[in-house]
Length: 236
Image 1: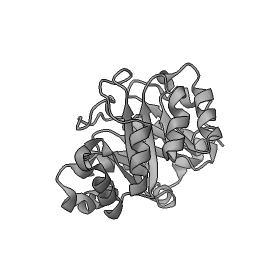
Image 2: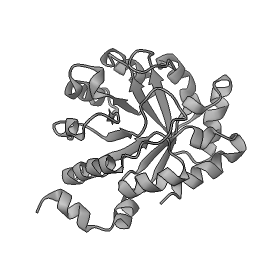
Image 3: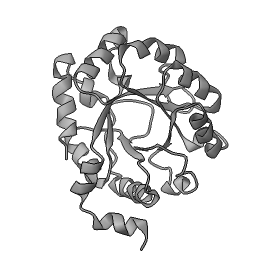
């Protein structure tokens, strides 16, 4: 019997209990003039990961931070640094972000000629390897790299800016969850884009276990960070 068939015979609540939902606030939406304090605040508010969006103004239409800033903010939290590289080419920067304190490094298959090699390099650096799928990227790109990934990121917006509207891609999220189930490995399924308490319910039901949220966490000030994180976690 195929592994994905076995997966769909298990109640979703059982699957999610085994793989609890984690929240990864994206510092793209933080107050950059007070970044260290913002990271400490989301850490104290219950964030599981610190999500760092790296943009180059080429692969995506925005420019954010690099390894130097990542290294500078590493001291402000011991939580997992979840670094999403929206840059091309990405390979030349993998070691820099690894040395800067990244725990997970996620790359796009379109950001270099050899995604298999990029994932191998990340793992050789002692980091967890992630692959990101833009809304138009087919799930089939995963088929020959599943043994190398620790995290799969499904984008539910086109990357480049925070605050965008959610693109309903629950079928894609479910298709990725099937592939993960077939491996028997503990691979995180992360979703990023337009995540709020309402859309969180949909993506968790589809199989996501890590939720990235920028404005959904940072939108209304530090006094509400804990409430916002709890609301996303309770989306199921």
